[in-house]
Length: 100
Image (cartoon, rainbow, N blue to C red; front, side):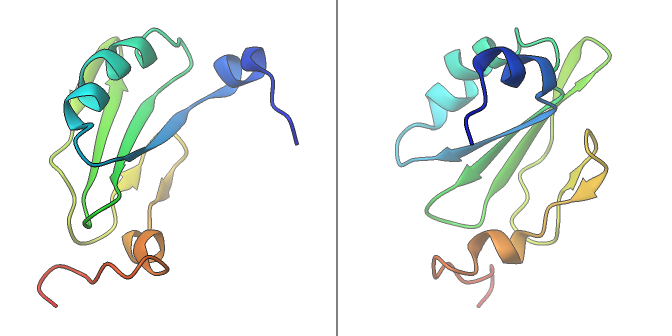
């Protein structure tokens, strides 16, 4: 299924991005700044590819708020009213829960 750039920009509430090794500064800097210009974007979720680590940036009114990184538990996605199951994100890639 193809989703046009116009539809993506119009209907995007959360956006997920898989963080690659060494790209953290870019993901939290220039890339985040660009995504903040999307009017319909309410959450930007960074998922680390090397360890259990999820960061969420949320638009609250017109201010972006960074959450503390989640390494255990299930972070909420308020824009779509669900909880992100951290266990399911990492179950097929062999990254054990913190403390194992």
